[in-house]
Image 1: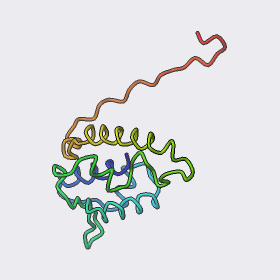
Image 2 (image 1 turned 135 degrees about the horizontal axis):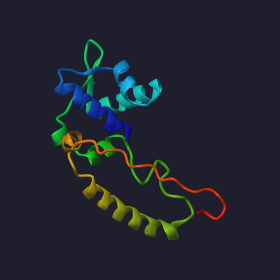
Image 3 (image 1 turned 30 degrees about the horizontal axis):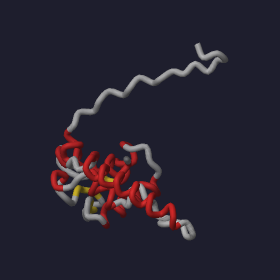
Image 4 (image 1 turned 45 degrees about the vertical axis):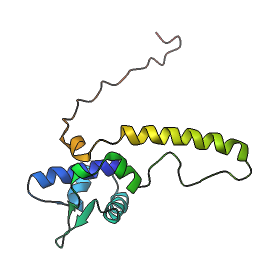
Length: 139
């Protein structure tokens, strides 16, 4: 998740003495300028980050006091999307609503881990890529 990646880079920078300029974030993260600018604006509105007078981005809240779930809610990332209910399909709405509620309850519980805990975890080595045999017969 890009939002978490930005916060993690800022947390690392904070431990070494300061924030990061947008250019430094762009070097560290595989993202286009416009996407990063939009994300920083969203994170700022949600009070996760703040921009200094010298154009450095800093964490605006203690990552031990915010969870991954808090970040997802702030960035409006979730199962429901922006569409809402489908008009004219009331018979299915109640069942879908129940399923979404169960999934969201499970998500909320699973993502209650603090951002500081996630930032402190060692990076695991990348998994070996799975090689698929695309020849006829598959062996």
